[in-house]
Amino acid sequence: MYDRTTDTIHHAIFKNLFDFLPQETTVVLNDTKVIKARFFGKKESGGEIEFLLNSPLPENLYSVYIRGRVKEGMIIHFEQNLSAKIEKLNVDGTRVVSFFENQNPIGTQALFAILELIGHIPLPPYIKREDTKEDIQDYQSVFAKEKGAVAAPTASLHFTDTMFETLKHKYETHFLTLHVGAGTFKPVDAEDIRDHVMHSELYSIPESTCKAINENKNILAVGTTVTRTIEYFKREKKSFGECNLFLHPENKPIRVNHLLTNFHLPKSTLIMLVASFVGIEKTLKLYEEAVKENYRFFSYGDAMLII
Image (cartoon, rainbow, N blue to C red; front, side, top):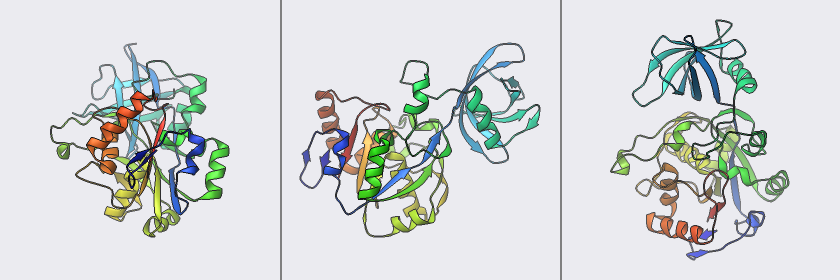
């Protein structure tokens, strides 16, 4: 835990979170649910191909990443009578596709139901192993509800059912939904971070959460996804849509007071978000401390509370 007021670091285990979090705090969490977004098919020529669903688009189209060579107009076949047509090849590496079941166009919920049968949990690219049965539970928060994410909001993974019940008893809690896309792993590739083109992700905020955000009470954002969604809402005044806000030391939070987050990849937009709270120099010092203490990094790693 890092206290900005006193410039002090404290080491503790996660179950002691409530010893450090100020009592008069509203806690906001992301209830998105990770879908089995990684799945395998075959070209009509018989060649194998891998899809990673990124996000739904208007008019029953989808943004996907594809491992394997494809051309516009190509048809890919999967199990459960699912097929996909390659509609467009984007310069950013994504592909626009449409999906069919028994050659009939299908919507998002029908697609998610099929992927539940044939898909795999989309573990982050830095986890160099295949997904297992344990990941189905471990890579999902205990309060996950709204299907649509292809990556977990990992700060949420630390909460057990017991801790979550304690949280609700001790603090005012609210939810929002931001469906984490594969773009979350895209590094900052601009020499000037202000020139980085941020990926966008679908979000929605219930009326009760909007009201809580607009009050004067301090807010703990559980994770970077919650932080970006709250901050986007405060700037744009929209309770649903696509969030593409990039927080960094030159674009600091204006509403979120406290942050709970994991330790992130170098050069990522996520570590830049941490730096938007404490600055680049302090972020580097906090990460040096975590390395010295043998903290685990990334999705299945340890957490840091910034107050």
